[in-house]
Structures are given as C-alpha cells and as structure tokens.
Image 1 (tube, rainbow, N blue to C red):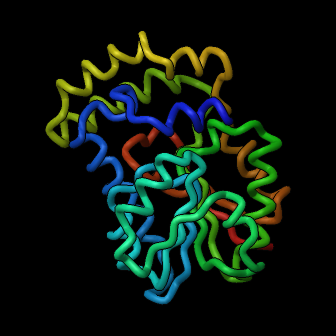
Image 2: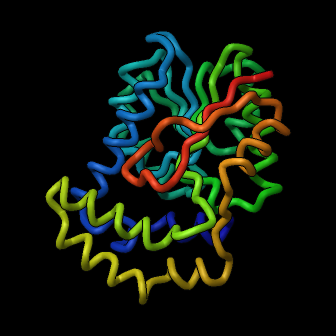
Length: 231
C-alpha cells in the first residue's frame, strides 16, 4: 500500500487524462455519495478521498464531512482547498481511527479496496464497524471483480470521456498507461479482486449485514458497490 500512496501523492497524467476528467470524475462521485446521506445533520466519513475536488457538494448535504487521505501532499492540498469550509475536516488515517466509537452516520471508502491486501481491508472494516453509529451505513465502492477488469475499465473511461467532452484525451491517456509507473506498480503488487460473494462474506465477517448496490458509485458500472449495516 505504501508504494501506491507514494504514487498517488504526485500528479500524473495517467490518473486523470486532463483537468476536465478529474473534475467530472470527482463531481460524479460526490453526487453519488450525496444520495446516501441520511440527513442534513449526518456526520460523514470519506475514507481515501483522493483529490475530492467536489467535496463541498457532499458537505453541503450533511452536518459535517471528515475526509481521510493517506498521501501527505494530497492531504495538504485538500486542507488548503477547504480551509474556509467549517463543515469539512481533513484527517490522517490514524486521526480517523482515533475517533470515538459510534461517531459517524455514514462511512464511505470508494476505489481503495483494490490497493489493499485482504488483511488490511479486514482491519479497516473492523475500524469502520467501531466508528459507525448503530443505525449507520458503510459503503465500500468500486470493488474490482476478478474477470475483465482492465478492458472494462478502459471501455468505461472511453464512454465517460465521450459523455463529458474528453474522449480524445481519454484515448491518449490509455496509451500513456502502457509506459507508466502505474502499470509497473500493478505488475509488481497486483490489485485485489473480489467476487460479489467474497465481498459480502468479508463484510459479514466484520459485523455487517450487506447487500450489493444496484449501481456502482462513479462511472465504471462493471465494478461493484456494497452497502453494509451493523449487525
């Protein structure tokens, strides 16, 4: 995980093909998460939020938004971007884990599980179970299935680009992946993949009654989102 954190701590054209891609990516995620916010007073945790350029959209729908980011440069940029928004806090993973039990109404971890070993995922699910209110909801998004992950991710990006006016940039972005550090890291460490049954089993073992959501958060509908409530 540390190698992935170091990779994402710096701007790369392979992550977002241009600024428009980055902005519509985070806006779509914020809008999808916003639909799950249970009330205007809800305390929300977004774990592994990345650049989160539309976090204010999510914060406007809840009482307070805590964003957790492990990459120090990204975290510093988040803190600077939202310094004037009293409804947003930017935390380290350790600061989030130290919060009191039952703090959050909604906990979201989107597009992070694929970079974690299964033991680390289980550790985080146990932390989420402790931090979640008894009637709260945990969302684990962008789970990568074992089959056709790479071609479906490429197809989803091209469709997303066509719908949001960055198709040609998406084509060139896919070409850059083949000579990128991302591909080298992926070959060295791999990504964690889960079937629907396997992810439901992990959530159950962590103390959640879970279901697969009707659609994944974000643009890639080949991947999966899971909703869990405390047993």
